[in-house]
Figure 1: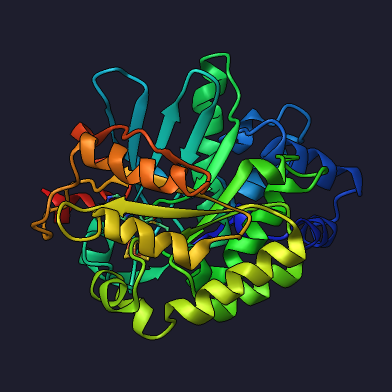
Figure 2: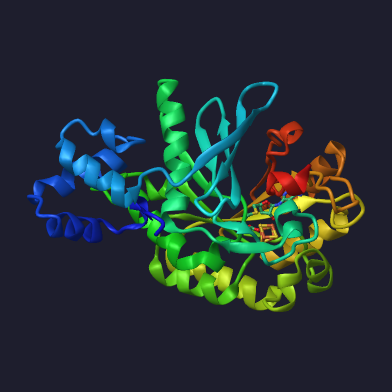
Length: 347
Ligand code: SAH
Ligand code: SF4
């Protein structure tokens, strides 16, 4: 029988497990601290656990759910992309981005994605399965260890890797609980961002949580006609109810949300599109992130030129819409937004 991922167990389940093994209560604190505060990557690194317990844990559990298959570094060495193999040999990618003022990990929530946005490499590969809580946390822990070896700490986490986080809602939310709980990883909720294509019912559910986690909605088009061509999920969850749910989110949480908009030459990047976008979101507490579309194998249209991106930005800003241009990172190693796919598929 395959061993269980220890990171998949809730802290209370792990405490119960240790109790069943006849261990005193304080052992679970030692074990949880080792996993979530010290980020140990193997059981034999836990200095306070007795040898017999270590052997027992090793025989029942896997500590690190991810096997590093390869890593690629951008020319400026700031962006690193990790390809991991999971227990069932499926593969995912995780990206670590070093900025002047922060270090951000971009994590995956699914192997592939079923939503098929036409410009997204992950969407183009189709869907395999959801990631478990441990597989989500394992990506963060890997990058924390990497940064700690450089004398740094992780500052931000974004769910912008492979997959749609709201289609793996319960595991994503449980992973976030583990990340932010003071007795667990104690990571600031405000430094975590969930990016979603906008599954309206899930967005409503998320609003009810009144969470401090940031929310980004991948919009990419200002009309249903165009958005449905680019983001097929729009046919199921069109703009009107989606944007109404966004306004509801802002009203309830008083938090600013972000709209992601990838500019595609001649497709969604004219001044007219910018004006249509303004009329859709005017008055909402929001920020628009513009990015020139990154290339992916099966989508022929190029990203907009930097002049066009600037011009689009100018139209938004003249109308008083808070907006900025997101810098592209790691494009030459296919580590940019929407470029993640299993290695076999992208070669
Ligand atoms: N499924 C979620 C999160 C993963 S995708 C979502 O769609 O929001 C992360 C971001 O990359 C999204 O904003 C997505 O629209 C964007 N993206 C996908 N393909 C892209 C591409 N080729 N160029 C730029 N951004 C892209
Ligand atoms: Fe899935 Fe997001 Fe890619 Fe769309 S952009 S296919 S929702 S990962």
